[in-house]
Length: 435
Image (tube, rainbow, N blue to C red):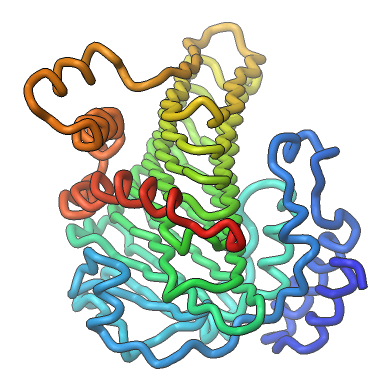
């Protein structure tokens, strides 16, 4: 059975939901069947081969095992005790969640309940242009997810932590988490989307996040991918930013066997702004691929991108960033940078920042760098008695500090510094047969 036929067969067993959702699921499946799973012959996947996803007979993730709060905190530290929503194998776990006591200012609900709400019909799977094959697969198969709504004019000071726990079993499992964030005009909030693993096993996470930023609203979205180093992870973030709105998106990836992040932002109103920051760390035979697309559709838009990568062993990284400035988007200001650190001779990075400018009154720049640890700095630390491994760790922490300083959540920024060092060590220790 080929991969497309496998997914068609599994689709027959899912719960379709409300009539409008069933129709949307079927439409997404039809689009997926027509396109199929991409290969390296497709330009967007030229450097990333998803054959391992295609050849595995994935089963829907079962209902997750019972998990106590102590175990959750151990695998997803820091957990913010007053604002946590937990999903195990893609399903909401209310017993592990601590909804914030914020009255009507913030609405967070399970998408498994929301499809009966007619108001959701015009919003779910409505952000952006035609979806990618994996995003269509998510729309066809997602069982649950988070719907976040911030009321007009409300500023939510406490970060909202969405934890997606991947709990593999004996069979290869696939989960399709979904997040919809809607910030109404003048509102402000920080949302952390955290993907973690409960043990090793053959698993595939296929996540989709949609973000709608209203006029004068501000959203900080922080995605942390720290699943098991042998897992497979594909995600897509699509956002639309209205007039004078601002989106700050951080994509922090800490090495699975294959990680692919797609981020698409449309600046859909005059004065809209976005900042896209990324950090990716991989070792062993791991691969991390980041594709971004910023669409300046209206005048006076501002965008900035800064992605940093650290690669060790035989790891491979990909950065493909595209900025499009449309003819009517005069006075746009766009900058894009990708900086990479290779710790071994066998590590590789394919980097391709791109600008597509169709307006004449703009300010745009892009660039990329690839280098190694600074030997002078390393010698300086060693000459003062710092052991080699510790000196390397200090220099790596300095390299990522430009990213972590941009996080508004201090406890998370401190944890990210530690994860950089931990994950590179974990990747070196993966048994050959598990890769």
